[in-house]
Amino acid sequence: MRSIIFLSVAFFMPLSAIQYDIDNLLKASQENSAFLDAKNLQIKASGLMIDQARVWGNPTLSGDFGGITQNDISGFSYSFRVSQPFFFPGKQKLRAAFAAYNQQLEIFSLQERKQLIQFNVLQAAYRYKLTEELLHHFQKRLDRFKVLRAAIAAKPLVSPEIRAQKFIIESALKNSERDYLNLQRELAVALQSLNVYVKVTEQPELVLPTFDGIAPLDRGALLSEVATNNILIKKIGIQVSQAEANSTLLSREAYPDININAYYDKDTGPFQEHRFGGGVSLPIPLFNRNQHAVAAAENYAQAAQKEREYAVDILKRDFNAAFEEYLVAAQLIEKFPVNQVESTNKSLQNLTHEFMRGRLTTLTFADVEQRMRDFIVSAYMAQMAYVNAVLQIALYRGADDFSKYLAKQVKE
Image (tube, rainbow, N blue to C red; front, side):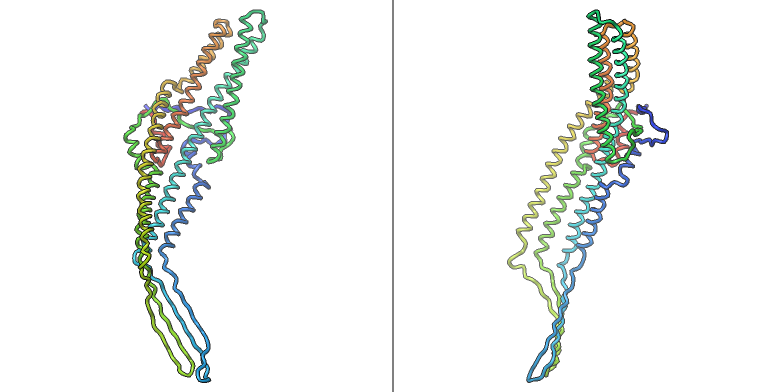
């Protein structure tokens, strides 16, 4: 049975408030995103550069006009010339292919940004929601110790036991106030992080699943996916291909372009002449065959391949570190199940009643109360650690849809 528990809303929310689940958050984060719009414009620009690489060179048109005098007879001289360069066969295609690699890099960068947005949005949303829930429990703890402080204050401070009770309760209350303020700060920071991508209300209503069981992941299968689907590896692969294409292009650049020209001349002097013709100019690659640039490009291509090998090793190392965090987090959510938080709170209430009736000593009450509070904190921290680990793995393996990937991480 799928074991998903939906977090309840901790604070009062207006009926008109928008509920955000994972799908809504991800959809809203990618709508009207300046971060994504900028990359889309860069993709468009790189496409235009591909078209530009295919464009023919411009023809050159020149003309001369002047006077001519011969044997005291004057006239005019006209001259018109036109030339058209023709690229060496294959150059335009190679230049367009080289520019196409830039566009592929931009497309992968767009996917990378989409993944990063999904990662940040889900992380901020869980950070906010789990902190909100924990803040709700700490509010109950504050209320509980305020009641206890009032009860202790009503007793005369005549015995060491009463004075000890007062000191323990006052210290616990101050510590609770400190933790409560820190949680309020954490909640505000999480909301600001979420608002970078989704313009939510001051108290957004987030409906997010939590986990009390896991669907074990196959480390070997994931490593294989990381080596092939990770965006960084894909981008380095494109850079390798681009470096190889650049080497081919530079070797082709050694062959000169052909320039075809035509001319027409006319003299209207005493001996009228008409001259016309054409020609071909072809630079001879005698001294410069671009050989050093080609050799450099080949070295760059080999360097890019080595960079890819190194990047794969580093990526595997980082992925394995993230997977170890996942394994620990998976054990923690089983040891500190979040579905036992409410029952722990009820036990805390009963414990407080027993203490108020004098059936528990102050030290026993303080020790048990602290342990129960630690369990509640550990339960929410385990949830956050598990979500972070799963999102990290999804990021490493190049997942396109984090919502589907996250939904799979529970037991059937």
